[in-house]
Length: 156
Image 1 (cartoon, rainbow, N blue to C red):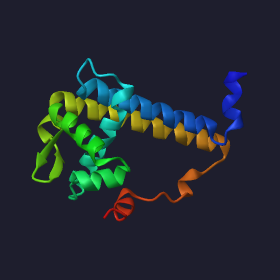
Image 2 (cartoon, rainbow, N blue to C red):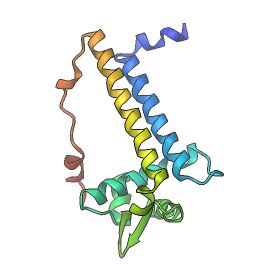
Image 3 (cartoon, rainbow, N blue to C red):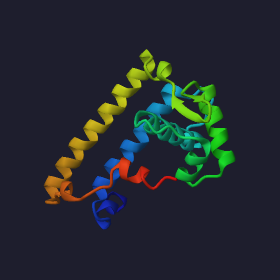
Image 4 (cartoon, rainbow, N blue to C red):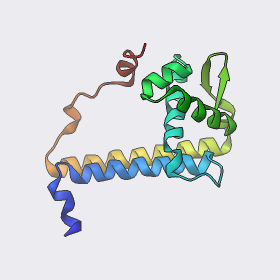
């Protein structure tokens, strides 16, 4: 009975594939960058902060604590604690008011290995979703999805 649960949800199998890929990517990031004694689930928000800092930095729009707190809808103090943790892990660095990705860590052998693992997960997910969508006769590629740049325009 539990095996048929996906049949009750529209795009249930596709949602399962996407969920598994998010978990796999987060586990990869945690295994690469977090200290061994850090609990996985408790640090998901910390990695989300890191991803936001990375995207803002690459787009040439680095975040301040205030902008990041507003973007994440989190208290400023919470964001500051997460940024301090990311600095201890050497994933981000502070330059004045702005936070940037630490290229030394991300470009390290471990960092590049993590990138390749995440890239493989994304590639396999895209292939699996394509097969499932074709089998179901659903062509979701026609759906318009807002870009990250459009989402960033809403920032103060």
